[in-house]
Image (tube, rainbow over all chains, first blue to last red; front, side, top):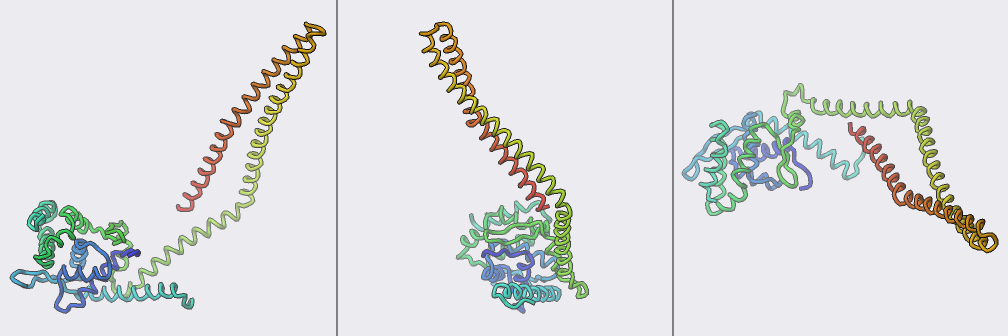
Length: 107
Length: 233
């Protein structure tokens, strides 16, 4: 992609991906789903998940799966509010950009 | 490299971070390789990168470095603080991000306006100084050109007159040997002086003028370079 993805946008995408699963989801799956939207290396999502966890936007728990414990991520209440903020900001931003691109009316 | 080698190497590289953080990271990457599927193990390991790269990414995250994903990969930027503005705050302070941004852009616009006003106010001074400097420079350049031109004219005249005198002298030898010889000698000496001036002219055009032009170009580059710097500041 020619446009850079800042840390805030990446946070937003990760929160959105995790929030879609009510039971929570795990690192590999999150990475694959984020990679649908943006091109990032497979190993770079860990610091983002860890930071969101420390910021109390994500909760983790271990669930047994195929004879081993897999770590699951869940969006917290704080994470949900943060995601709402991001989504609002994104709508505002993308609307303005779209308006400029398509030559809409000036306010 | 097998997954065990990968994990062992990663653990070794993470030996200088806290045990809790190390365990978290190792757990994550171990899970990741498991979830990638045992049949894809080599591919998953390859896509993760080398243990050194993974360790660097983990440590960068611990240092609070927020990165940016660009076309060509992950870049860490020092612009963490500007991103933290957009983090969720209680509704009362929600307007903070846009407010801070407009204040910043307003300040820079103010600075630009101030510079423009100063330039306009100082224009008589700038024009006067500039005009004076331009006049002085033009005078120096025209003077220098005149000197070079006169040297060339002297060279030409000396050579022509010298040759004429020498020829007249040669013919004069038959009429009055002493006078003719003297005239011929003076003519040859004049011719020699002319050749010296010619040499000087050639030197000026060959060496001095290019050097002066280079100097002027360098001067202009300096001036415009400085102007660019001032605009950026």
